[in-house]
Amino acid sequence: MGDRNLFCTPLFLRLFIPFGLGYFLSVLLGSANATMASALISEFSLSPGDLGFMSSIYLIAFGAAQFPLGVFLDSRGARATLAPLLFFAVAGALVFSQAHGLGALVISRALIGIGLSGSLMAAFKGYADRLPTATLPMVYSLQCFMGGLGGMCATRPMAVAFGFFGWRPVFVALAFFCLAISALIWFSVPKYAAQAKTRHVGFMKLLLQMFSYFKDRRFWDAAAISTCAQAVMFSFLYLWIAPWMHDVAGMESREAEFYMMLAFFGTALGYLLNGILADFLKRRAGLSWERLYLLSGLLLTILLGVICAVNGRAAAPLWGVVMFLCNMTMISFPIMRTLYAENEVGRVLSLLNFTIFLCSFLAQWFIGAVLECYPVTRAGFSPAGYQAAIAVIVALNAAGVLWYAYSMKRTKTA
Image 1: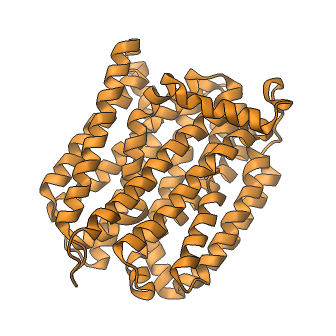
Image 2: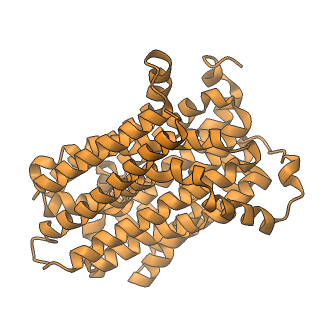
Image 3: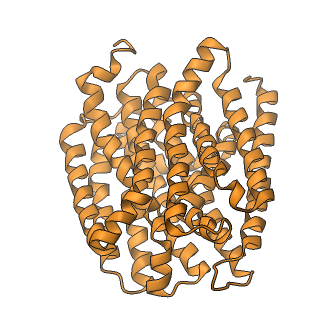
């Protein structure tokens, strides 16, 4: 199969259409809280800590589900794993639509997180099983781009839908959309033939092997930058970007939604171009995936430092560039794929995803906890609180960059 003809083949379309729609929905539902943060605060009388905890439950449930997910992906394949898993998201969206208190919101977010936990990793595994390795960075980019589109739809389009129909009916509609995607995956994606190395191995043994990757230095070398960068993306795009626009930049809803749209556009562009640029720069400029990964992390850290220092309206346009750079670090997934055997791919990529979402949960919760330490006024949360939280995040990203630079020097991968 020639690389140029890949995207026109029936096999690619059978994989990309259902997996792409699944990830589109995953980011759409995950990001919806940022758009409706003000409405949730008003209707449910949520504190900054309540809001941060409720929203971040999605991330921790999503992350925790990566352990059984990785095992099932390696033993049963993407189709048989993701299609039934999406039923949790259907239930979560319906519970959210009927919520009347913080408890129901938390339960619904947990169910949605579990249900959508396989949307990206199942796609990565499905592509890795069926498509040539050399094409994976490009294919992974296209898959992630669908998530970027979902994030863009979670801004102004979602706000318009909430205003026209109300947020509760919109979540009922999203539940049925999720159910339709589950059916599409089941009937479209080819069945998986498990490899001999995993076909007759028990669940617990595969899970213990997955845990053992935590002790593997190769894993932590490849995970260093993307873990910190993706924590920035998920903690802000899934919650804190809208409050930041209001509280720090002093924007009204419509203007804030415009800049959020720019941030999500940067996200989508980073998703789309990380594989394209990785392939182009490697062929034309001799820039390895590893050097591009390091450069993306370094530039991201610098821009976050600028946002922290400015801490005002002038920094708002930089969020789009920050989100672009966050997703340029997604090249870590193809890098990780080259480090492990085919029968380990589902587990190691899911473990990387778990690490990302655990750190994203901690970052999202941490920002809310820091804001709790500062006075809350009628105008909103304290700009100084955001600045303090972002300063810590900048330091963590700098540490990730330094760790990976050291690992490159040690292993001479550059």
